[in-house]
Amino acid sequence: MSNSSPWHRRQPSAPTSRREFLWRSGGGLGGIALASLLGGQGLLAGDEGSPVMPSAKPPPFRPRAKRVVQFFMAGAASHVDMWEHKPLLEKRNGEKWDAGEKVELFQDGLGATFASPWKFRPYGQCGKMLSDIVAPLGAVVDDLAFIHNLVGKTGVHSQATLLQATGFNTPGFPGMGCWVSYGLGTENENLPTFVVMPDLRGFPSNGAKNWDAAFLPGQHQGTIVRVGATNPIEDLFPPAKAEFIRPASEAASHDVLTQLNRLHAADRPGDSRLEARIRSYELAARMQLAAPEALDLSRETERVRAFYGIDDTTKKWPAEINVPEETDIMGRKCLTARRLLERGVRFVQIWSGNDNSFPRRNWDSHEDIARDHGPLSLGMAKPIAAFIQDLKQRGLLEDTVILWTTEFGRMPCAQGGKGRDHNPFVFTNWLCGGGIRGGISHGPSDEWGYKPLDRANPTQVYDIHATILRLLGIEHTKLTFRHNGVDRRLTDVHGEVISDIISS
Image (cartoon, rainbow, N blue to C red):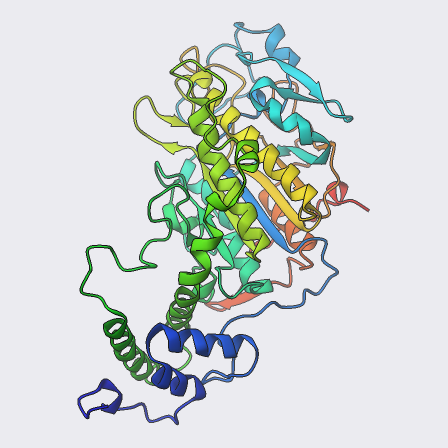
């Protein structure tokens, strides 16, 4: 190596660590991967004596689950059109709706009482009433625990989305997947601990703030996987037009970055951002081998792909209700999620419904509930039902918690005759899987689906988060991180475990 090599420039004053030696001698991504491999096996200490990668940590309680899948219907899915049968809406359809109190809504959509456009029918041994647009989930309804008395704090999408995703309705707080990554670590160092699958048609309100690590160490942030895109993980490989990039030049570039990073770190002890960046390079090196295989759905049989609704063109729907397209979109995400769970990914977050073109295709159905909720619900229900059944037959459901959520519900009255305005006063979540008692409904809403039946004892998102953490073996009051003099946690200063939905 010549004296012009970056390795012969000024070095940090601290002694050379074993990791730095491997970076120098291995060079480029190969050196990164080697250092990380040794670190993950406990054979290599970082400069501060900490592991190179956060390995799986033993939870304080006996865990019922070890991984989480969160389905987020962005835009506010209507509980009274999907999950809660309200005969009173059918009886009073078209009549003046009166809440008996002053109601402030997002767009003042206080029209007449509005019955759901769809019929509800009983499913499963539990006899749960489900709308026709979520009928495929009837096959697994005995595994689901519905929470019908969930309340929000705001009818504004951005704030309400943050509340469900991070536990706070203001920016600057880690997503739930970040907390799970921080609390439990990784089970597969070749793939991210926390994977986010956005809708290819657009990000939800707040974008990456929903899965950002905020004040937690940066390696816990969600990694975006754009399922269905030509390039699912951006910047993992050089672009095709960058023909000038060769293995030798890439290794030399990483050598330079290594040196610059070490010089930077030597002047800033205690700053975790550089460590997070180094770990991202390490993960990228391993993902170049692991990710393409994990995301390759062609490795699945045609029967499995059809079961999830991928390339589903068997049923002919009206052109304006493109159910096969929506089923294919969600089906690919669900099957990808199953493959990632099998390979040790700890937390998968799947977003649906962020098409803001006109006529828009999302869950924010102010104008036409039938036009929007019809294809989205049917396109969501078949793949998720297949996902649950597939996990179950593979033995994965028993230690995987699934959460279906949205930022708030929709009103029992009409807006513009065919739509519904925001309802932050009550809405529905459901859970299933590891430790969840299925076939039950917890905390009903009132006869209109307007507010909780018991207004003094609603369920809040803190309770959902506390319950999921308990199922993972974590006491939610103990999972904290000191930030600006405050011991922050996912559940803030709130949260009670919902014991009624936990199996004995």
